[in-house]
Length: 560
Image (cartoon, rainbow, N blue to C red; front, side):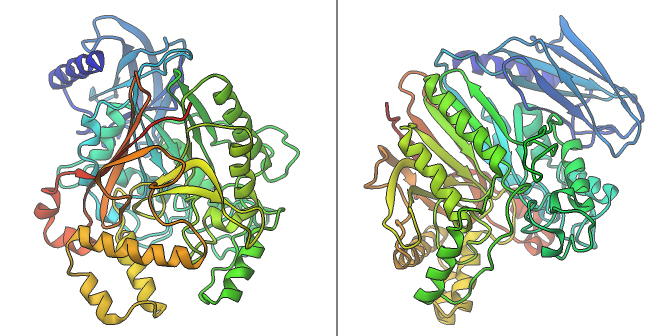
């Protein structure tokens, strides 16, 4: 870590000496580096001036010896440019700068991934879910200061179907509207641009969930199954114009390579975009980025009736073995790469899945892996039967930190079979409302709590709200035969250091740190008290003064 701190200090000095920072003038969204592996990276910028953007790369922050120079042409000020840099050295810190046609310079840094075979320690961050109408995002204001090896931007990176100052009508439909939505979230608001700061400070990996296009779409379903796609003259939603437009702009506005499947033998995946990624970081960790939207079958209908008969019927339908969330090609890639990581002696395997894989109850479960129970069981059984160690699932989507052991059933109503694996959800960066008040509102609407209880809940301190919420959720989990929140008493060797395994009233992000020597994993969730759009509009100074602090922290010892 000492070398990393020295590198960070050098970068700070260089940035302070730069003629113009990345967040000013004609580079309104800063610069970014992403999709890195051991020898390559994608560099990104958006300039409001047409003409050449020159990218320069060096291993020293002063750029005394520029090792690579690449140029990209801006033809439209709303369309970013990217360059694919190859021939890099593994385990190396690089500095880069982008100079646009107006002479504005944006600076950034990233690290290439360590080659297999060594334990060097690792620190990275994860969060998802942010809306442009409640920017800026002070919940991640400290992320760029944490000397991270990388950060995963974990889906719902725009809310294309929510109104915001960029697209007030709501659902984006055109290329211009999608571009405006992306430009909005990476722009400065009230003097703060934390997402641009973060993307300039480290290598990022980027995923989609549904709101990059529209709410709860299933890419492998027929267009007539979703009102936003009805009328498209294609077999699957993932070929519909709205999907293609959303994904094109997602690719444009993120430092990610354009990759495609070949002839997979499955019409849902053949020649489609391939967003799945597998990366290894020395022998410390492997990263698996999942696309859970583009190829999934249609979601089951959500249920409001919580009778035993309704619960059983939902679970029975979810266990249909023909249903898939990932698609056959991606599921096979994930299995093969998990086996490869285990065979290579890599300690930790982080599976980034947009929606939770833990069972948290059938209310609104159709969109999660809970609604695709047969494939969920196949994946967890695969992990257990192949003795894959230290597999951690990391999800976003539910706008809270929610930690639990993982179990699976062989069939609907069957016994719960434990897996020596666990999941943490994280975020949101900024989504009104977070999980806590959302669950309480649903509970009141379902007559599971009284209106008096809902009113009392809203005036309690945040830790007390989380405590009561955890008791309520645990009760619902028990009623459906599921494990309560937390990792205590299970197969995971864990110690809770601060806070709780449930954080449901904040905006924030989660940091994962692997000790170079012991390989112990420390998981820290940072956050600020959540706020509403109205609160940001009426008292932005108070909201912006909130600084991220630790709401949850625990340490997990690896299984050998």
